[in-house]
Image (cartoon, rainbow, N blue to C red; front, side, top):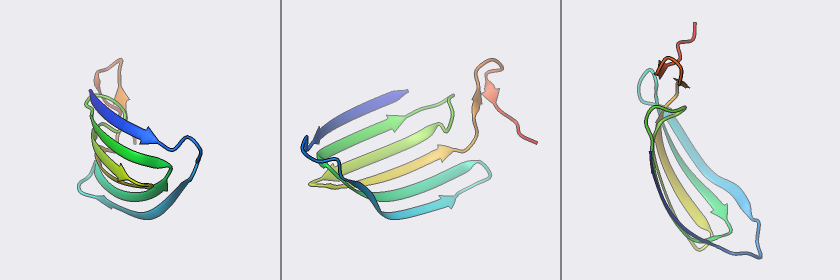
Length: 90
């Protein structure tokens, strides 16, 4: 897993609301989301890449002056750590 995050938030605010949301299934198990949030963030840069865990995939966020944009492409399945494979649901 790669997780890089730089964030500076306004300590006097707890504002958080959804401005816009788009989600699509790109395949049988691959989903894509694009979100815009209104937050207390002054600046935010986030990059997360994961494999072999629940909802593994790529997430990129950037925010400036109270607005954050998030792009997330991920596997909708859950990872079975004992079997070292994706869970299969009937």
